[in-house]
Length: 282
Length: 258
Image (cartoon, rainbow over all chains, first blue to last red; front, top):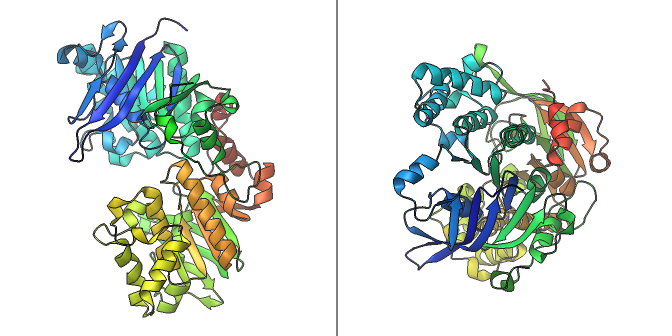
């Protein structure tokens, strides 16, 4: 692996609530190179908050604390809002789960993509438009000229997510954080969107963080997989070696999925061990 | 138990007509679990909603227990056939306690021994009496789906219509709900008609499965065919391949099926 793009050491994210503080992320450390890194966990595992903390997108009632959190040598904890704004979108960008909530409903999708380019590359409208059309082609949209002029409600879920990917990739970021980018999509469309992200990692040397609840999907796609539970990392796995997972949580997650290949009368249920939240990482 | 013949459902009219379901026929025997799988827009949920009369217009025939269904649902039909929805957050009234949620169907159908029935229904879905006076926001997603199942079962129906009952849940909770559904069926001889996009979930619960695409039934497969990966139709094969995880080469060979 080359020089890491992102280094995170002992990241903690907590939220103030009327019922006292809630710790969403409790001491997470990892590095990201020019690779496909998966973060997998169930709801409440802290996987999304880990991704958001890197971009400084933690909600206002939350606070971030870490021994170290850097991107390309820049200290993200001490960076000014101005520096962060320059990184966000241009060098690290993020794709959320549902394109319907991330796109502006009253602006044509093509214009939204062009705007992303114009702002980050300080390009003219004409150049931005041309780049947006090229980008639509890159994300395998068949009639880019036609799709450019559609509004978000006129495109399907799969196409909307391609538009989002085009918008996020047009400034050619070094890192893309994708939070459940395909969960709202049909399986075949899911795979096509992943193939697109795969190309971006291969062709542009981008670093990709794929956040998902689907352990099998992530393991089949990523190079390494971080398994999270209760705000902590349970285990880091080389992809391909999912069946060698050691941690009882990972094993439990794998076992409780119904399998297409063999019949089971009852599915094993996951027994959560409170010690997982306190014991040192294996 | 359920017999469907030449079922077609359209929305809109004239040039903007959408054929959501086209000429679908299948039948489900008493005590059987039958699955409908497909991607979004395949018409699988529309079929379920027609049987439940949430969507009261169709052509063709739907027979349940030997009787032809009409667009108006009778009380007896409602009692014999209940539905569990995908989203347990949206399916339960946020300002009603669990007790009120479970009591309402008993009142509508004029059943007595209500307290005892409510406690029994909670026990059937693995929840203790302490859940009775909680609100939906005070319990977890899995517990909510258990309440939704309890509400469907409290009228002692013969048929459960299950619309993606586990797809909004974490996988560990999904396993618990699937086990619950399987146990309830074994104990009570219920007939299930389940809609899902997840082939593994459908194969776990159902012996026979209709694969749907764009309103048509592509083929009917058995659980064994699914497990052996030997469907007859290329559409089913592609769907199965996509379910098995990311494979760069396989993605390149995907086709569009009309």
